[in-house]
Length: 107
Length: 118
Image (cartoon, rainbow over the protein chains, first blue to last red):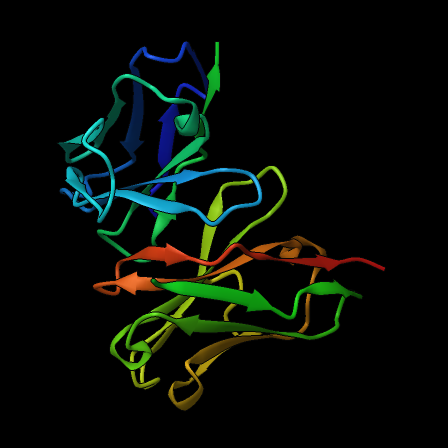
């Protein structure tokens, strides 16, 4: 089973600033990597798949990069709606596995 | 608009059973794999099971294999998770989701809480 590790656990950011979230896989997952946003009590929302492709309706301030074992989600000009927990997930091999999440909070 | 709505969660004793349902709308249900994903308190998301468009293929996480059964009813745009021999570590919010290319979930429900406790 591939272990996904996200860092940092918590990121404190002021509105309007940028945030960089990292995700590392214990072995190569090629570009089979997705990012999700999750707010308490809500359905998780797919942001990025294929490491860098934005899902339908996701604004351009969200971008993903990386391949192999190292991946990054960048959010520029953070808005109030962006404060949430973000998870990465690999889908290169079974079972699909998730990172432990990064909480982006208001500074 | 794609919508998924879980139901059937609740409190159950260890060793008991529960059946979760997920009602889907806003897309051609029979064209998609569907999944269940759960999140225990303080833990990361964990994929539980998924089922092929016509129900002919099903996959399970090792942690639930032999105890949980996924099924679907394409005529009713619904799919299900039958959970037997429940344990305390099955306590979680269970989310249903639509699979994208049988690889990841592109739309999720809001989740239903399952609590296994005496």
